[in-house]
Length: 296
Image (tube, rainbow, N blue to C red):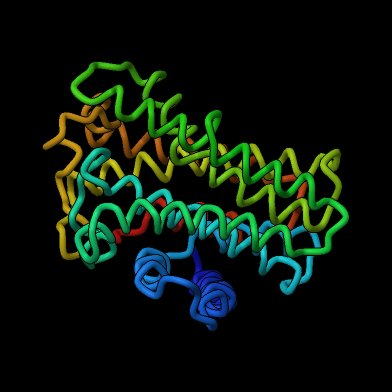
């Protein structure tokens, strides 16, 4: 990757983060009924985060000609869903984590009940933000986010993840779990951005979907690798947690080298899927490489 391309992606990431953070912060300009609940929501949403899913919304939409201002709402909505999922995943009944993004998790910073309610409120706020948009494909946008978030998407993936603890699934079963738990929101992000610009029948939207499925799985594989090779200070969460909980991972099934090779193959598949979009998809291709090269 040449330096000019890296600088370009860096600039796009910064611009995307600035836009979505402005949208998210504005949601809390007016205090609501329970200030402590708002504070817990802000802690789970606004304290750190790479803002990868909003970036995918912006890059996918831009690749198909959407305006940034029309992408702000879906970008914020996907990040609200992601934040809610992390707040709930960190709970003692789920993954029982005490550290997220280098900060105490919401149930540690506040309390368990407040964390549950904060997650609930972040989830519903996502659909409120999306529903405010006056877009001819609003129904498709809402359905995309709801399907990816619920019992056939991310929540299903979390249920499969919990059921797999201490078990011995094969690689296909592990992929099935992560396609739902991690992959569903990544696919939703690119589809939300694409749907702002084009109709659902546009073949370029299917190309984006194939891209997102591949990078979603590659992203999870690389996270599994980092859980083994990274340290808590760098990761912003407890390293080695998957092994400590006897959770199946790609390194445990394929070895570190095998897992890294699998991620690289998926990135090649993702980039190939972008061919119908031409040069407009170059930032998405750069992002695919970044997702398995990052160390944080």
